[in-house]
Image 1 (cartoon, helix red, strand yellow):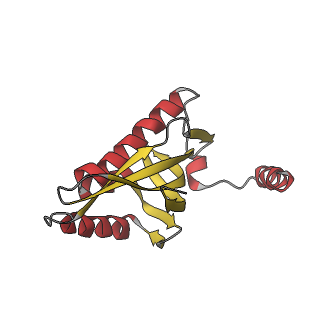
Image 2 (tube, one colour):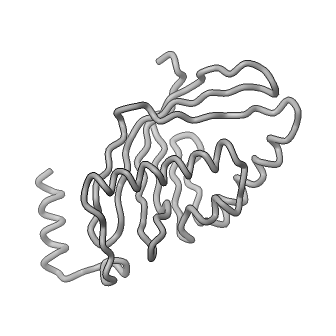
Length: 170
C-alpha cells in the first residue's frame, strides 16, 4: 500500500501524464459510474456469449486491447481478439457445438474511477455450458478485473485480466 502511494505521489509530482489524461475526460461520480460500467459489462458479455457479433464486439474494445487469461495467455489488439472470436462464432454453428453462458455473481462487482482514463471493474462470474441442444450445466467460475477506457463518449474495454478459473465445484 505504501509503495503504491509513493509511486502515485512520484508520478503526480513528475508531471507525467498519459495521453488520455491530457484530454478533458469527465469520469462520472458514483453511483452513476457503476451504473454505466454495469451496462457495459452486460453489453460485452451479451455480445460475446449470446449474439456472436464480431462487429459489435469490435466496437466494445480499444484498438490496443490487452486481454490476459490465466489459461490462454495474452491476446493483444482488437484485431487479434475479434478475429479469434469470429472463428469461435463460426465453430458454434455446428449442430453439436458447445455454447457458453456467463453470469456475473451478484454482489461481487466493484467499480473504481481512474481519473483521466476511465474505470476499473472487478468481480466474479460463473459459466454454464451446453452441447448442441443438450442440457445446460454449471461448469466453472472465475474472477476478473477490467479497465474500461472512456474514448470520447464511448466506454471501451482496454485491459482485462481473467483469472482464477476453476471448476464450479471448487
